[in-house]
Length: 301
Image 1 (cartoon, rainbow, N blue to C red):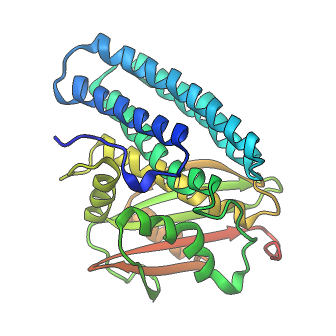
Image 2 (tube, rainbow, N blue to C red):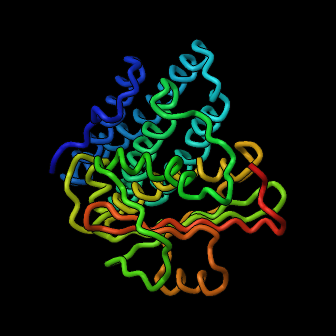
């Protein structure tokens, strides 16, 4: 298997941060090589996971110090993402690892979540620190959905796939996406609003996205691919959720999961999403569906 490696496209131009990201990818590769590929040396795997956690905490502290030093205006929102990883995501992964006695499946889940999170966080949040991406997005105007979706979802996807994305038109359940996979994220607002975002992608496109993240080829959906895609999607869509609110924390993630085809179609029958758009990358298509149920009119831009 090829190596999981830090890639040049992940660079933000700050040596201490880029080097830390490089090291984090290296740690994940070592865990993969020791336990997932060779199925040996459980002790080394356990120690590798502990080291990944400790190094992540150190890296977050250094990155946060750098953001404070330069007066980065997105510091508070960025730190909240670090805190969620430190105090929620990593502890949940540790619980699963311990409960399963570090099973191969649990280790694969750890690798997928951490790599997907790193990839999405670097491309979307860390690159904003040095101005490679805007740190703040304007509130969404319902009349300009294509521009909004381009800024919060398509632009990072373009960087991952390394090619242009073409807008095709409105998407419906009649549009065929071969071997479609449906990943839904549900957010709840402080006033009880519900925001649901669904990415619809063919299995081959998901495998290709995971391959570009990891720098290796995947030929089937496995634990690593599924959880890497989930974390990447959450990073992409978190900014979309923030754009729907009056402030960045108005919407909190409640659930993220893959849907069956029938579940997805039933959602459409119950309520057509406000945004339902079809896109194409080369010969493959994917869709983005966003629905805000506020009980009232959505927030003004």
